[in-house]
Amino acid sequence: MDLKKTHLYEYHAEHGNVVDFGGYAMPVWYEGIQAEHGAVRDSCGIFDTCHMGRTWATGPDVERFLNYIVTNNVSKLEPNGGMYTVMCKSSGGIVDDLIVYKINDEKYWVVYNASGREKDFKWLKKNSKDFNVKLEDVSDTYAMIAVQGPKAQEVMQKITAKNLDEIERFNLAELTISGYDVIAARTGYTGEDGFEIYVPDCPVDSPEKAMKIWTDLIGAGATPCGLGARDSLRLEAGLWLYGSDIDESINPLEAGLRWTVKLKKPGYFIGNRAIQKMKDEGIKKTLVGIMLDERGIPRHGYPILNMEEEEIGVVTSGGHSPTLGVGIAMAYVPPEYKKKGTELYVKVRKRNLKGKIVKHRPFYDDSVYGWKRDK
Image 1: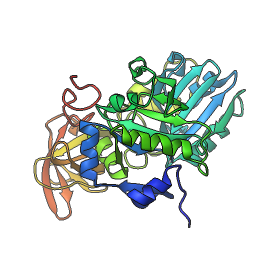
Image 2: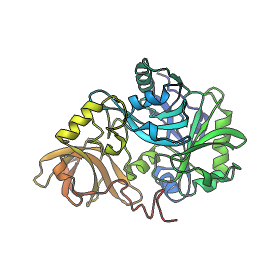
Image 3: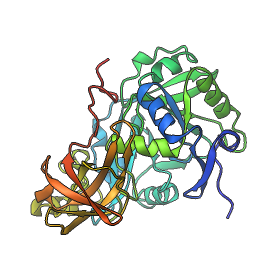
């Protein structure tokens, strides 16, 4: 099967180590995961995120439709504001996590994961039949580039005239960058400050605009980064990966996403009753962060054991933290084990490595790293 290519494929093919990622030809690294991870934590890195899903939702019923399809309260958004949320099935299981941005009362920008790109758009279409709303999947005609790190604004400011101080976190704005009109949202998937740039009128087979912006960002001081650093960065930030930490078998209350669920918002949303039922009855498992006390790397699927060496869960996401220099993981365990400082084991191959429950959003000290850091 031929792999799908993004707008920036030619750059990756020349400079990166390209792999099959969910059917897309994507770079896992350029110079190396450790170096790219460090560039984002300390300076500025850029990522090709063109494989993600992007949809315009418009029409008189668009707000009511989005409030029906997601768990958060879209009515709270001001123009150009965005919010993180999830879509659920009637069972309460998570279809995907996504960000919804309000342009105006009848126009919204919806961004979701690459892994669920086709599934998510079908879900949106299927559930829009009773609403006067138009859905347009523009994933292949809008390029998408993430600029991340404490120097992300400084780097971007070199190639745009707009004062980027004016764009608040989880807000978007129109601006001109490298001579092209784009949309930029102040968010990302690394835990750091930064922007996601959306380049309109830029089809995959004519990607000159995206390539110009990408190379100009590199010229302004950004480091190209691949999927490897993207995963290690988001893990350190305690951010969910769909298909590993959340999926259709997981309720948002179990996943630590209670803050995205507004059970009392006006009207019914898909999954409302199932989530309410779980809230009333109590969760049987909860997502926690684990830091190893011993040398080793926890991986997806590795067993979690209590101090009596009884299996109580499995690692959903895990790896070596370049920032902290230790193994870290996320896992679902019974609620009685969620207290910070609780000791347990992670079974790494044939060894039971000691670890403990820690704060994991983020794992690092956010006064030193991340968008909240002391300036």
